Amino acid sequence: MENSELKPIGSLLSKDNNAYYVDVITDETSESEDLLQSTSNTAHTVSWPVVSGSNTFIDCDSDTVVATHVEKYLLNKDGNLWYTYKLTVKVNKSGDYYFTDASNDTYKLSVSFESSKHSLSYNSDNPTIVSVQYVDY
Image 1 (cartoon, rainbow, N blue to C red):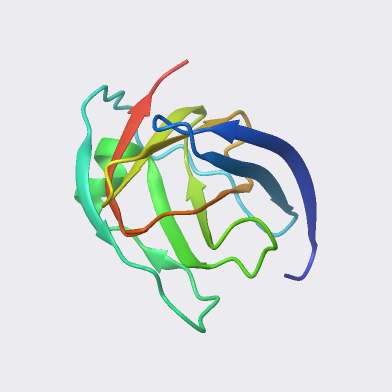
Image 2 (cartoon, one colour; image 1 turned 30 degrees about the vertical axis):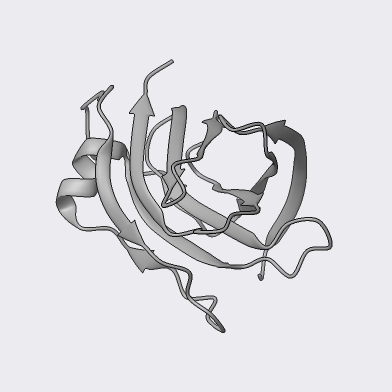
Protein backbone atom coordinates (compact mmCIF):
# COMPACT_ATOMS: atom_id res chain seq x y z
CA MET A 1 0.00 0.00 0.00
CA GLU A 2 1.51 3.28 -1.06
CA ASN A 3 1.58 6.18 1.42
CA SER A 4 0.37 3.89 4.19
CA GLU A 5 1.68 3.08 7.61
CA LEU A 6 0.55 0.15 9.74
CA LYS A 7 -0.27 1.05 13.35
CA PRO A 8 -0.93 -2.07 15.46
CA ILE A 9 -3.67 -1.75 18.04
CA GLY A 10 -3.66 -5.20 19.65
CA SER A 11 -5.34 -8.53 20.17
CA LEU A 12 -8.86 -8.90 21.59
CA LEU A 13 -11.34 -11.69 22.27
CA SER A 14 -14.46 -12.22 20.16
CA LYS A 15 -17.91 -13.00 21.55
CA ASP A 16 -16.97 -16.71 21.50
CA ASN A 17 -13.58 -16.07 23.18
CA ASN A 18 -11.54 -16.45 20.01
CA ALA A 19 -8.56 -14.12 19.73
CA TYR A 20 -8.51 -11.57 16.92
CA TYR A 21 -6.26 -8.64 16.04
CA VAL A 22 -7.06 -5.05 15.04
CA ASP A 23 -4.96 -2.32 13.46
CA VAL A 24 -5.25 1.03 11.68
CA ILE A 25 -3.74 1.78 8.30
CA THR A 26 -3.28 5.49 7.74
CA ASP A 27 -3.65 6.56 4.15
CA GLU A 28 -2.43 10.04 3.29
CA THR A 29 -4.40 10.04 0.03
CA SER A 30 -7.70 9.25 1.77
CA GLU A 31 -10.33 11.98 2.02
CA SER A 32 -12.67 12.13 4.97
CA GLU A 33 -16.31 12.03 3.89
CA ASP A 34 -19.11 12.83 6.31
CA LEU A 35 -21.91 11.78 3.99
CA LEU A 36 -24.39 10.35 6.44
CA GLN A 37 -25.88 11.18 9.79
CA SER A 38 -27.60 7.93 10.80
CA THR A 39 -26.77 6.08 14.00
CA SER A 40 -27.93 2.49 13.96
CA ASN A 41 -27.97 0.05 16.83
CA THR A 42 -29.47 -2.67 14.63
CA ALA A 43 -27.46 -5.32 12.83
CA HIS A 44 -27.49 -4.90 9.05
CA THR A 45 -27.39 -8.08 6.96
CA VAL A 46 -24.56 -8.37 4.43
CA SER A 47 -22.82 -11.15 2.53
CA TRP A 48 -19.09 -10.51 2.38
CA PRO A 49 -17.27 -13.71 1.37
CA VAL A 50 -13.51 -14.13 1.43
CA VAL A 51 -11.96 -12.93 -1.83
CA SER A 52 -8.79 -14.84 -2.62
CA GLY A 53 -5.93 -13.25 -4.52
CA SER A 54 -7.31 -9.71 -4.61
CA ASN A 55 -6.38 -6.51 -2.83
CA THR A 56 -9.18 -4.51 -4.45
CA PHE A 57 -11.72 -2.98 -2.09
CA ILE A 58 -15.41 -3.65 -2.75
CA ASP A 59 -17.80 -0.70 -2.57
CA CYS A 60 -20.79 -1.21 -0.29
CA ASP A 61 -24.30 -0.61 -1.60
CA SER A 62 -26.05 2.56 -0.46
CA ASP A 63 -28.28 0.73 2.06
CA THR A 64 -25.21 -0.69 3.80
CA VAL A 65 -23.47 2.70 3.85
CA VAL A 66 -26.55 4.39 5.34
CA ALA A 67 -27.10 1.68 7.97
CA THR A 68 -23.47 1.02 8.96
CA HIS A 69 -21.23 3.86 7.71
CA VAL A 70 -19.00 1.25 6.02
CA GLU A 71 -18.19 2.54 2.53
CA LYS A 72 -15.93 -0.25 1.29
CA TYR A 73 -14.37 -3.45 2.51
CA LEU A 74 -11.85 -6.15 1.67
CA LEU A 75 -12.00 -9.63 3.20
CA ASN A 76 -9.13 -11.91 2.26
CA LYS A 77 -6.73 -14.46 3.65
CA ASP A 78 -4.37 -12.66 6.01
CA GLY A 79 -1.25 -14.75 5.47
CA ASN A 80 -0.49 -14.04 9.11
CA LEU A 81 1.13 -16.61 11.38
CA TRP A 82 -1.73 -16.52 13.93
CA TYR A 83 -4.80 -15.45 11.96
CA THR A 84 -6.21 -16.75 8.69
CA TYR A 85 -8.55 -13.92 7.61
CA LYS A 86 -8.32 -10.15 7.50
CA LEU A 87 -11.24 -7.73 7.14
CA THR A 88 -10.27 -4.17 6.20
CA VAL A 89 -12.91 -1.44 6.06
CA LYS A 90 -13.16 2.23 5.11
CA VAL A 91 -15.81 3.99 7.18
CA ASN A 92 -17.17 7.54 7.22
CA LYS A 93 -17.93 7.88 10.92
CA SER A 94 -16.22 7.20 14.25
CA GLY A 95 -17.85 4.63 16.51
CA ASP A 96 -17.93 0.95 17.40
CA TYR A 97 -18.42 -1.55 14.58
CA TYR A 98 -19.49 -5.14 15.21
CA PHE A 99 -18.88 -7.70 12.46
CA THR A 100 -20.52 -11.12 12.71
CA ASP A 101 -19.29 -14.02 10.61
CA ALA A 102 -21.26 -17.02 9.34
CA SER A 103 -20.16 -19.08 12.36
CA ASN A 104 -22.07 -16.49 14.46
CA ASP A 105 -18.93 -15.11 16.11
CA THR A 106 -18.78 -11.32 16.51
CA TYR A 107 -15.73 -9.04 16.39
CA LYS A 108 -15.65 -5.45 17.65
CA LEU A 109 -13.68 -2.73 15.90
CA SER A 110 -13.54 0.73 17.53
CA VAL A 111 -12.87 3.55 15.07
CA SER A 112 -11.67 7.00 16.10
CA PHE A 113 -10.24 8.19 12.77
CA GLU A 114 -12.61 7.75 9.86
CA SER A 115 -10.02 8.98 7.35
CA SER A 116 -8.05 5.74 7.75
CA LYS A 117 -8.66 2.15 6.77
CA HIS A 118 -9.19 -0.15 9.74
CA SER A 119 -8.69 -3.88 9.87
CA LEU A 120 -9.18 -6.89 12.06
CA SER A 121 -7.61 -10.32 11.64
CA TYR A 122 -9.38 -13.43 12.87
CA ASN A 123 -9.77 -17.20 12.60
CA SER A 124 -13.08 -18.82 11.71
CA ASP A 125 -14.55 -22.04 10.36
CA ASN A 126 -16.98 -19.91 8.32
CA PRO A 127 -15.38 -16.46 7.78
CA THR A 128 -18.01 -14.82 5.54
CA ILE A 129 -19.23 -11.63 7.22
CA VAL A 130 -23.03 -11.83 7.47
CA SER A 131 -23.91 -8.75 9.52
CA VAL A 132 -22.53 -5.37 10.52
CA GLN A 133 -23.71 -3.22 13.40
CA TYR A 134 -22.68 0.38 14.02
CA VAL A 135 -22.94 1.97 17.48
CA ASP A 136 -22.18 5.67 17.89
CA TYR A 137 -19.81 6.65 20.69
